[in-house]
Amino acid sequence: MPHEQKLVEDFAQAYAEKEARGRVIDALHQEATMWMDRFALTLNGSQNLPRLLAKARAMAEVCSALEEIHGLINYCQHMIDLMTHIIRNR
Image: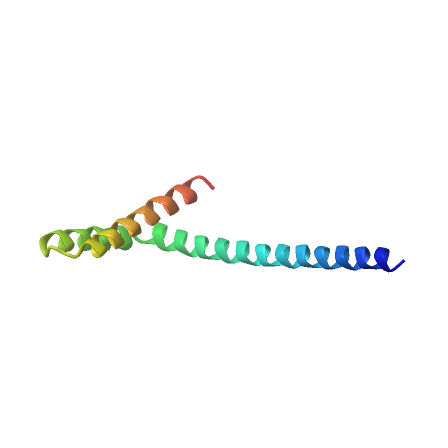
C-alpha cells in the first residue's frame, strides 16, 4: 500500500505541475497576443516606425556608427518585417 500511495502522490504532483505549466503558457500566450495587437495598431496606424528606422540607418551610415548600432538597426528591421508578416497572415 505505501508504494501505491507514493505512485498516486507522484502522479498528483506531476499532474499539478503540468496544469501549472499550462496556466503559465496560456498567460504568456495572452501577453504575447496583447503585445502583437498593440504593435499591429502602432505599425498600421503610423508609418513613423519604419520611417524613423530608415532615418536611423542613414545616420548610422553617415556617422560611421559602431557595428553594434548597425546590428541593432538590422534587428529592429527584422522585427518590423516579422511582425508585418505575422499581422498580414493572421
